[in-house]
Image (tube, rainbow, N blue to C red; front, side, top):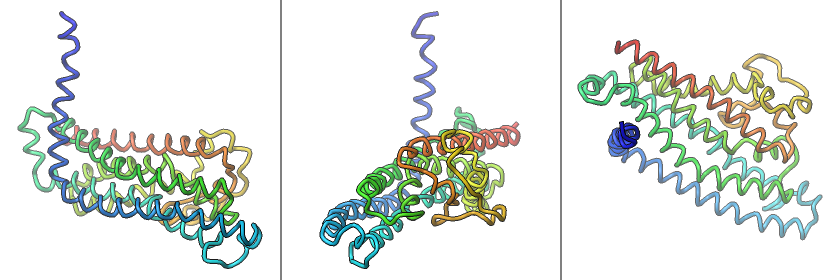
Length: 301
């Protein structure tokens, strides 16, 4: 057996996936165009707000740090923090919910429109048919969300480093909640859509159940404080716990948030916290996709 023969399956598998991805992108060109417009608008808004930090620095230099943080001016700490948090709410969790809803809709439609029977008559296996679609959706939503995350974190880090935000939970929320974990939430949303669409096999049910499952898993993950088991340096820093079970959660827009944990972070904890949180979220996504594939195999056995 030659080396060419040994290496040939990988190119064939890759070539088989590319047409499926292109087919999905053609099917989604209208929704993608509609999503691209608000993304571009948000990018322009984030760039504009970043330029506004120069006015905040000029005001602080003019009136002094105490007056800047405690006074009432057009570009003072309260106004600029509120502006940054408004940007935060548009990015922190909504892309994940949109990804969940669209993936659930498309996956459920494969079943309730009987399109799955077409896949069964092709040379492509149903497993590859669905996994390629899910992977393509995850990549598309991640690519759309990535510039928002980069531009926002650039602005938040700049303000945090120059001490231009009000002190307390608002400053911590603005700086620590968006980053790689935001992209992991998007992948989790796609995985939740894949699971609910495969399980329920009804597009109208999956479009509701997928965002709900994404939210519930995220809330349980935050409430469990599992991130502390991964990010060991935080174990000794966090004190306090909101009582009341799931109802004791705090929220940043629609994203469940552990205020005691966020308030315990320092600037050096950013990457550790983000990476630990991302690993846990991605682990949940892998479990959901694995569950979806098990359901698929059982129903098509």
